[in-house]
Image (tube, rainbow, N blue to C red):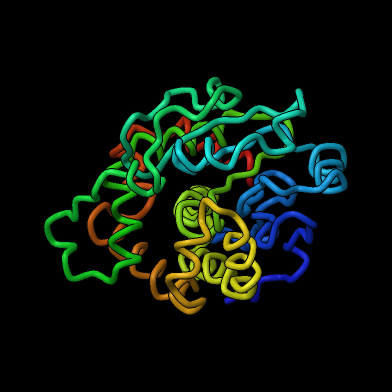
Length: 276
């Protein structure tokens, strides 16, 4: 396995887990192209210098936000929302009550009737038959694919057909929801199984910073305090298992995508975002 390069990290003031999906090897001997798709944790606390670097230096034009409606509304308007050149798209990977189809259309108004704890807006996940004995993180990731396959595909389609310019996909920590969408994106680009797993696990290097940033937000503080850092740390075997199950059940990530409407044209468009 080719080791991941440390220069894939973007060291920003306002995030702890931002990196480029470029520079990864592909099965045909190529590499993904830097500066096309980035992955990150929450973007709410970006500094002015961060915004300048992302928008003016890296050409950021699309933000793919995978948080729930309640997270977006409770966290409020982030600094990138003031940049006219940047388009924001929202795709919640978790089933929820009262979902807004255009969450950013209501973000300037008073928060609509959200429960006292935002987690209560999330509907209980249904564990698919046969997945009951999988580890909790694996069940969660399979839940995104089973419960919100439409949102997963729509997020990938936004990445595939956005631009010109760079796109950034993020959730709160940039490891779970973001990890699944990025894993599928890399698979479409031809990045091999073991490199996708390694990219996912790279978040473990910065997890203490991720947890500290989330703990400073009232939206996430309770969840951060109720579990230790180890329980938030991504493990390679989690993504390895998810990819293995996709291989066994669908002939791989591309088979899952094809079965859910993300066909040859979409895959070619996404591949071109990450490959020359």
